[in-house]
Length: 319
Length: 289
Image (tube, rainbow over all chains, first blue to last red; front, side, top):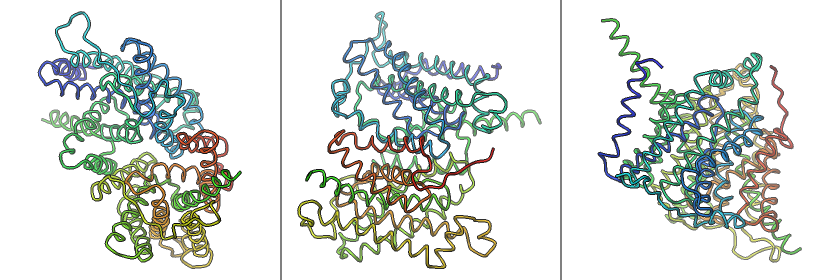
């Protein structure tokens, strides 16, 4: 990382750390969700943006992560921080297993299969034989964790810092994964899988790995989201959750780590503003933005920012 | 045995609706090799159009045909305005546009007609026929499906326009060389698919009631049906529709319970795609490396 890249990241981190001290509790909760969505979007971006496998069902992994956290906390009294690794492992395994048949599917067909997963998962969560754990249609209510060590902050602020720490860790891991051999292999598979295979990259392994890691990220986000919202229910994980994630990565920027943050801000705050027009307005706006971005700005906000910076730099050099 | 027979017949009736929607999916797939994720919402939107006509005092059958025309125009306009610019774009861009269409149609419908559930009339009498096994609406829905299928077959087999559309789907370049306007044939295909979807919507609305999210599950069954039959085979899609309808009803009633009905669709979709991607009647594609 060069110094030029480090400065904006340092500023971003400072702002992120100072934020809960200056805004209201409700805003802290909203920014907490932004961090949660950023992790989920990063996961989906690893799969769809970097590896080119389209998933319209990532809401399912988000739901599995959320239910892991909720069930462990509610039924087994596990502390909230300990549910994250469990959710991560469960989603890694489920994602990897789903990725195995998905290996045979390309493009549109994979979109179809994952769409089916996203639509049908809420029905599986309502299944009455699983009610013992999932709480059926009613879902599960969980308690908000208190700040430890007698820190002088309230529960919302503590949860925000906790999520921020997890998010930083997850972003660092993703950056490390994507900048090296693995990241290059993923992008190469997306761009030309035959040539990649011929170069000696094990396509099948990398594609299922991408699926598993992507599901793991989204699952961790789901667990954090459940802890923040303190409630899980099947109907809050319908297909529109998966579609929101797709909106997030397309608008934030495909195949870009910073895009996950832009996308998360977009999907958290734009519906809030649009809600004041009508209950239906957020989705109409999401739809219009989606089409607009595909036509006009296929690289998303991250791509536009990159281009804008490059232009400024050129101007500065010409002077 | 009685209960079983009843479930099979009810399955055939819903199967007819899946078959219609699957047919619409296959029509678009054949000419563009795309799977239209917005097909269900287009059908739902057309059904709302029919509902407002009927509420405004138009008798059922005129409203039915007006809706078919409306859906056809809607399909053509969507193809011309929204789909054409991404015709040669990567798959991801196309899928994103389809999803955008899905949410726009869904939210616009919610905006105009509100999200409250509405009843939709059936043109068929209320009393059951065939003893107690089947309602008249179910029998009527099967009948309508079969009529639509026959008309489509006759259209594609015996009219010059049908031939031109088949040519444009099979070999766009050669079709263009003999003077067929391939772009417009695609738009017509979209229009026809939307019209068929509209009919399916009007047939299913009396059963599931009218609300902006009514097509979510039905679209999934239609995907399953199209894949089981072979995504490029219209006849296969219809047969697949009836098969999925019966399977879903019988399994739901006797084996796994109603809650897991949609999971049947998921298992079917993934199963067919991984074991036999061409379905029962589809062409097997071989790609050269």
